[in-house]
Amino acid sequence: MATLTVWKFPTASGADEAVRTLEQLQSQELITVQDAAMVSWPADKKKPRTRQLHDLTGPGALGGAFWGLLFGLIFFVPIFGLAVGAAAGAIGGSMANVGIDENFIKRIREQVTPGTSALFALTSGGVVERVRDAFGGDFHAELLETNLSAEDENRLREVFADD
Image (cartoon, rainbow, N blue to C red; front, side, top):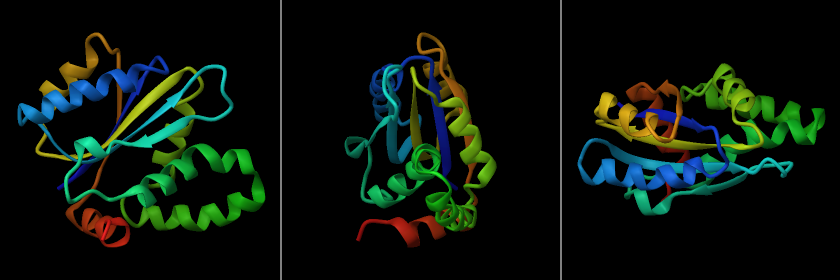
């Protein structure tokens, strides 16, 4: 079963710095990263910068379409207003079918704000305490997460996996 974890950092550069830690955890076989992306939101910008972390992922990666849709629902729909919001509501409903519900999206939207950053990772086999310790210390990261059932994970892969 995969877990979609979101680590929120109190600075716009925190997620960038934490990527190296995630790489180390993976090389120590304390976690398996199936896909990952990050958001960095400088305090002086109206919208965040997002990027997929291709270097960490293997052939099971979901691809840019998944991250684009998720980040669009979280960060960009409120900017575009009601017309786009109604269409996004329908799309958001389909994300709930794969274990990412409206509460998760709302929670991330409220907590990842200008001046912060976040690391999103679809992982499996994580040694939770070691991962939590690695991100908690110097990074002062806050863990927000949602667990995906095996069925949710399979649906995500069917819809978003790169061919």
